[in-house]
Image 1 (spheres, helix red, strand yellow):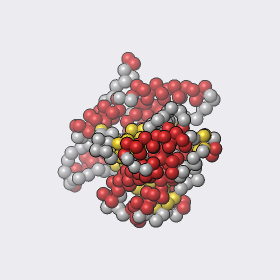
Image 2 (cartoon, one colour; image 1 turned 180 degrees about the vertical axis):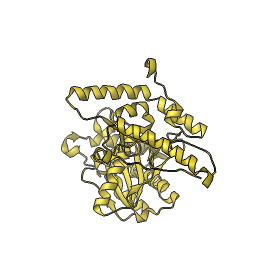
Image 3 (tube, one colour; image 1 turned 90 degrees about the vertical axis):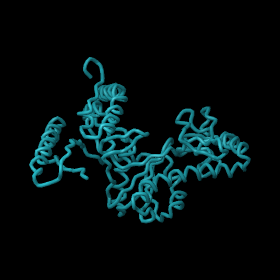
Image 4 (cartoon, one colour; image 1 turned 180 degrees about the horizontal axis):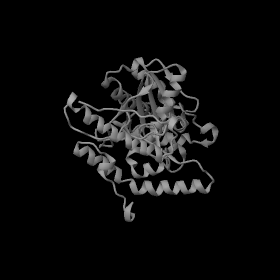
Length: 359
């Protein structure tokens, strides 16, 4: 940050062709840049003050980690960092259990993230769209929809029930939490139906108030002219349908039959909705890890330190161009070796992988 100003250069952030995608990636990198720097530096200082001597790493959208200095310069690489490590852990646990082909469902309070693992590996996308913005950077092929435990149920202009993408968040949260929230959410619907414990959650550590959930869902029932329990079931069904659509995007629309895959459900509300979702998609196998709410954290322990270096060159793919292609790859590998040195990675642990995105 020269002079205290965060600078994002497209030649460093996304050194590839396609002007709009390159611009979009650079702008998205610049927007959270100053905030990311303040957060990361403050975190690093507090960890050092607490006596932690291990180097600080930040998760990337590709399921691996990078050093904190790199993350500060390129925060765009961390956009899907939360769900990415969940996928990393899920595919490893599924492999140990003897299942290579799974669809992961990471459902939390605000959204649900789904990914498809084929033969033990989740596909990577070199370009993705995040909240409408094209991002040109390698990341796990994860699709997100606004359906989670805190998703708010409303009646739209046509008089139909709608769930999400607005969320009650953690504070005030669903009405049943008793923190002041009044909107009916998916969690409230599950409390009404008693598919969630109507008295306590978190193993008895947190009380819930079913009468508040009944009141919130009851207001929708009056507006819709339906029975209270019909509306509660409708809220859960709409949320399940949103999750099913997300899974069809990464499976059916890409030539994969979800019936041939197991459903790995995790996150705060993933296992709760897994059976309904599997029934919706005719999936016969559901896998739930022992600590589904902590799977993303567990995935952090299974990741590698990885960096991607890229460059675009428009040329015909012919024997005459092999020398030029080799020079480009050699230059990228030199940058990778410099990165190895900066990160102090021992020589036996270093791996280089060449990837070409061609047409």
